[in-house]
Figure 1 (cartoon, helix red, strand yellow):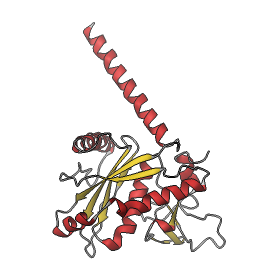
Figure 2 (figure 1 turned 180 degrees about the vertical axis):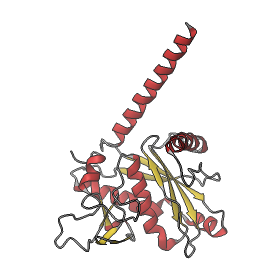
Figure 3 (figure 1 turned 180 degrees about the horizontal axis):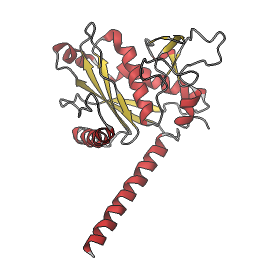
Figure 4 (figure 1 turned 90 degrees about the horizontal axis):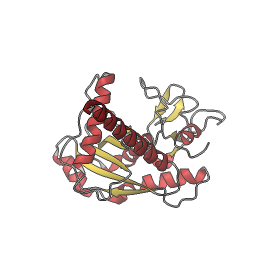
Length: 256
């Protein structure tokens, strides 16, 4: 009897969690109300350079993200003036859980649970009410030949971790990565070759019908780069050179 009750209660809890998650995800892409995106800086490498840069970061550092989303949603017929409202959280002193270098399926699942719990716990003293989406930006001092870890954005939990450079000249490209991971939390999928970073054709390029097709003038946000040719692409300097393509627009319900 008691076992049956425990199982029933567990199933009810899972049901309500699933319904709550579905409602949150559905509301996040109905484009009827502004989404609250909160960004939390983290000193990713513990350097003095990153600490000093974080001190200069303000909410205006991320206005390009608001402008980008407003411009692109309007292009698909949505009239909400400010579809995304960016807020800046206080710096986080603790590093997020690490996924590891060669994670398996179970590792990824466990990490997903850990990062969602960590995100909620680490921001509990500053989030009242809680934002719709949390993005943690781990800043690293720029070094030659230094390659950042991959960033990640998850629809489950609507949380992302971005690895960025602590340099004013990199602020524009940092915002491109933040916007990319933000759209992951809304259900957008990657549209580039994971092996070489080259945008998929046609879904990962901004102007698939352009003649001649290359070079492209803009990047598709989930393709990540401006395709110069079928085998070469460059990282956009800012969101001024980025668009939301048709496939991504359908994934985040900007169009049917």
